[in-house]
Every structure is written in C-alpha cells, then in structure tokens.
Image (cartoon, rainbow, N blue to C red; front, side, top):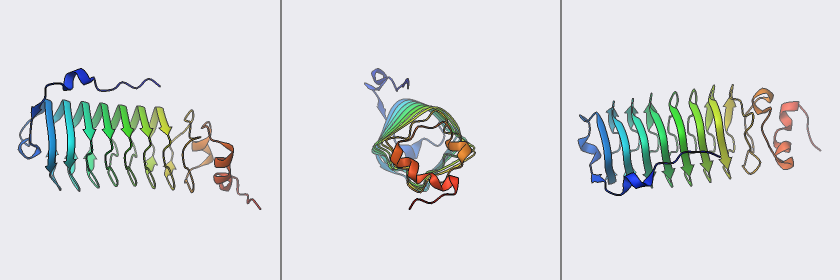
Length: 210
C-alpha cells in the first residue's frame, strides 16, 4: 500500500479563516478552518492547499470545481453535499460524515477515508487511484463506471453497495461486509473474498443453498 499522505510539516503554522468569507478567493493555502456551520453553502472555483478543516458542517451544500491538495478533514459533516467536478489530491477524511454525498465525476488521488460514515455516497464516474477506505461505513454506496486503481477496503461495511460497470479486479474484500451487494460476475471477477462471503454471491450463479 503506497498512499501519499498530506505532509504534516506544512500544518504547524496555519492562519485561521472563516468559510463564510472565502467566496471571492481563488486560492487558499496554509489555513485552518474550524468550528463553523455553513449549511447549504455554495462555492466554486477555489483551490485549497495545505489546509485543515476541523469541526466544519456543510450539509446540503454545492461545492463546484474545487481543488483540494494536501488537505486534512477532521470531524467534519458534509452530509448530502455535492462535490461537483472537483479534485482531491493527498487528502485525509478522519471521523467525518459523508453520508449521501455526491462525488460523481470527481478525481481522487492518494486519499484516506478513516473511521468515516459514507453511507449512500455516490462515487460514479470517478477516477479513484491510491485510495484507502479503513473502518468506513459505506452501506448503499453507489459505483457506476468508476475507474479504480490501487484501492484498498479495510474493515469496510459495503452492505447493499451497488457496482455497475466497475471492475473490482485485484481488490481484496475479504475483511469487509458485502451482504446483499449488487454486482455482476464481470465486475467481481478477480476480486479476493473469503469462503463465507462467497455464499453472498451465489445468486450470481442462479443457484440456491439448502
């Protein structure tokens, strides 16, 4: 597993910034955004670099054409927020709430999702490379025509997850929950599962176990 993390040396001296005052900013760097509630926030065309979001709540927001480079998100709540045509590079989501978030058609490179609630997240038409999902709730998540390379699921709950035209070849799901997963034989081919998970996938063969 070779996932690049945000370099913490850059987070020692950060300037405090408020989200409500950044609409006219094109680039924000070396900044700390903390303890703020901005539900239904709409921002676009901003690049964040070497920034830290802590205890930020943006529910039902529209965040369009944003770039996040070397950004740490801690204890943030982005429930039901749409990230539109955005890019994430070397970022971490730690103990965040991303339930119902729309990341479709985004680009995710060297990202860590740790101890995060991402139920109902939409990751369709996303390029995902060098990404770790560790102890993440991803029930009813949605992948359609998603391109994945070097993606790792560690103790992730993928119950009722839906995969369409998204190959899981080379991906290890053996320590994940995959009950009632919706997937095709073509997409699951080449993935690693354990003997008990195989029972959950017998429906693909059209057989029943007595």
